[in-house]
Image (cartoon, rainbow, N blue to C red; front, side, top):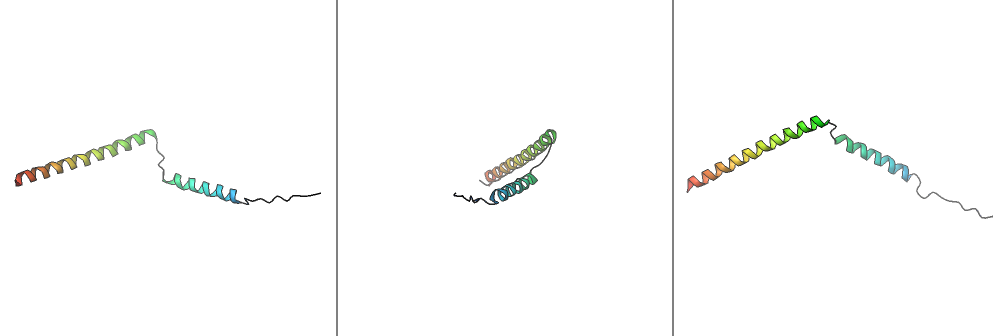
Amino acid sequence: MVYRLHKMTRGNQRDLARAKNIKKQQDQAKGKRKESGSSKTARMEKDADIMRQKQKAKEEKAQAEKAASSSKK
């Protein structure tokens, strides 16, 4: 009678990989914001307003520079 001894080739690799993946997912979830739809909309509006202000300031600066360069001529 011949007995074949099967040796586990993976060992605890599967368990270690599973634990590593769980830790990775938890770390990724830490950085995400958990907010309701209304607060997300409010944040997006606030961000859009800030960007509009920055764009307006940039346009004013460009006009001032254009006026300054045309007055030098």
